[in-house]
Image (tube, rainbow over all chains, first blue to last red; front, side, top):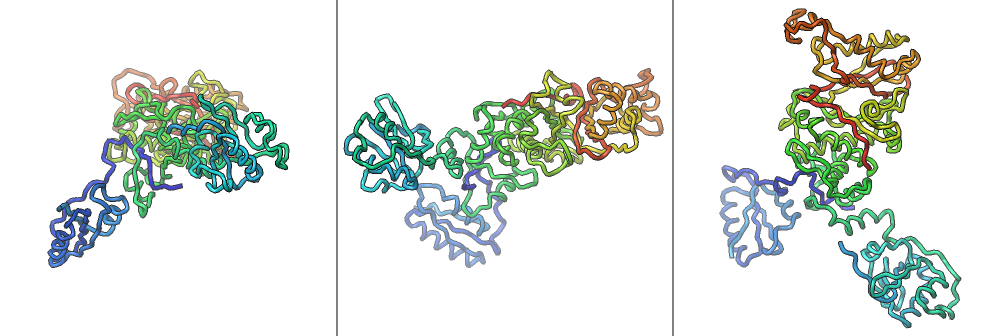
Length: 93
Length: 479
């Protein structure tokens, strides 16, 4: 029996997704996730971002959605949330 | 989910792991030659060997068409199912198929019983019910990541009263709903403080999380109905700074059926039915109603009974609390909800006369909340069996006990006015009274629970009573 889909016991008046945390003042010592949504050339944009971020002392981790046409899978979101302080999503075409 | 329709002609449902199914395989081959036959196989789409078989390993056809035994042979006409037979019976299979010479060249027994269908396998039935009846459920589905710990998730979502919860999966909620005849979408009550409709489904979710079994659900539903009304005033009870919560007193033969314990440690730990029923009510108020400590719940101290406070009464010489308050007989399962704080013990190991024992109880009741306050608060006195024996041997019944206690609880007015005895707390001065009753009429209630040894009773003090506070509510359990 899987326990991975739960029924909501609440009045469902609040969004089910967890809310974003406050934006950090700077990126010193933080781990930044770069999420490639699989749009063409998004990787080029993220490669440049990665260079800039690493030069500023941030640790960068790279992730990729299977398709830009659908929301990121829940496992990928969980992985990013567990490994990173901040995430940047590339929307470039 | 709509049942997948069966094709016209003959339909057979089989599994390889059934000796009778293997026995009738040659008959199915004969039928496939002679007529229109559709075979559904529950465990192996290659069985019976060499025949065209429809894969029913997800058991959707078996589930929706109530297959309990394999083999089952069904005749389907233009208007649906016309006849079915289960197991193997040469005579019945010939009658159903209309083929008089069916299996005449096969060396088969006249009959052989079938095997259990996989769709009624106890290990699978919860999953199948969720898969095929899940659309009955209206609550939002929350997807968790595979790596996410569901127990920590529930804490993080704020659903917990501080203790671990049972994850409310669709399987568990559907199984819970088997405990009541009421439909999942029936609205039972409006739950404060956010005034949200409590459907049977939402109550079942709380019951799952609290650790209930399906047979506990009717008690939880009845408790929800009993507290969510102006009479009981759950909103006020939640918002007060006093340390009170809903206390559920249960009676009737159903208490024993669901394993409640009116005996040793009746108000304590270790009984699943009592603790999970009380907890389910509180979780519903917390999660559906939005009533949380620090939010609308403003209790200064609270009390551990706000996790769960529910107990069963002994069927006893005085009858149940419920029967004393409402038109409910002793054979009816019932609850009384009371806005009460944690219980405290009254010791009297020496009284052997009802007069002496009544004196002890009255002195302790006088001090309830404050010895100079009167009329504002109700109480439930839970008499232990040894104290009950003192009263019954003295010939006192419920009415007599209450009347004798009330007579001893006429407080001298000059002693309880504000400032008397150098204590500012008390009743306003200048009312021109001689005495004032500690309890308003009906405000002192008796219940009967506890183990057979120990000359003790328990006092459960109440919150503000009457129209400005909470009145106890008694309800028969609705199944």
